[in-house]
Image 1 (cartoon, protein in one colour):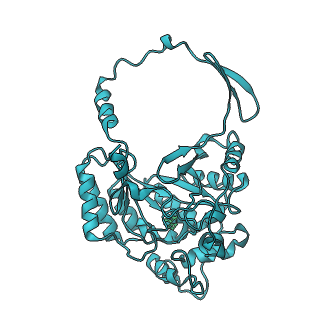
Image 2 (image 1 turned 90 degrees about the vertical axis):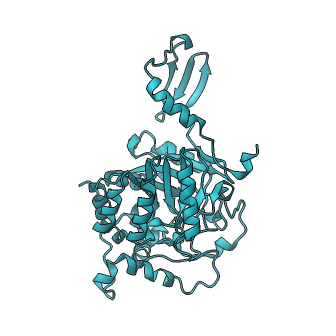
Length: 388
Ligand code: SF4
């Protein structure tokens, strides 16, 4: 084994059965920062993650969870709803921005309230599960819109819900024939690895393809407990992807990110996105410049395998969707000749074949019908854009 993952263990004062019980971990969450009086949104995390941030003080992981005076300062750019999700809400809990997928906010509860969260307007309002009427409305909307092929369960963290509730949601979605993929966005493997009991894994397997979209930001978040959990999930056939937010003074260095990406890949979690931090209220001190992120990406490119490289992206403020950010390797275009300078400084030209020599495949009629159906689907469901 190439990497050594250190066990976090448990405080002697806490009973082993309690520590290993994910429900107990979540119950303690509200007591994490009793001393904080007025915070922008709920503060707290599990005893497990609290122990981790104390263990790795130098990694500055405490900044992720502990409120500071900086979040009350006016930001250079600051939005209640930085992704403009409300504009794209088809029901109070369903965001339909892209034609083929919806984001279903099924709970506002998390295992950690990240101070940079993009959805502070929604998370931690202690309403727990979406109301019955909104749940039904959202399900009906998905049923009616046959172009929806993917449902992303999010919130909040769907894995804070009980197994029975989670199974009901998965079952309700699986009976809708046009739903191909279900994704579950979760930070629970990071802050509460004990959540992944054999019972939960069985449920996820039953409704496969279910993809887990994880959210690790730092290599110190991968303890032995986490590594064992990720192995358990991967062995059970559940695919995992990771999204990382670039955080000022916490992970915005190629040394930190390469360590995170390589360890994740080794544990069979595909690094998927590397996000520029969104300008949500109280997040200014976490944000870095796009230039800084491109420099980091440039350092990683060529030195790390493509498998471990995530897409560097940002969400265009107030609802423009994702924009991929890539270092510019193109030096010049002269007619059909495109010249590039590689990550290692080598410059060379790719000569494009002339247009007339490009032939399209003949035998495509079978897939053409499928493709036209996809293309016909309206782009996004913004109420404002509908009138354009
Ligand atoms: S776990 Fe996700 S949804 Fe919850 S506070 Fe953190 S970033 Fe926001």
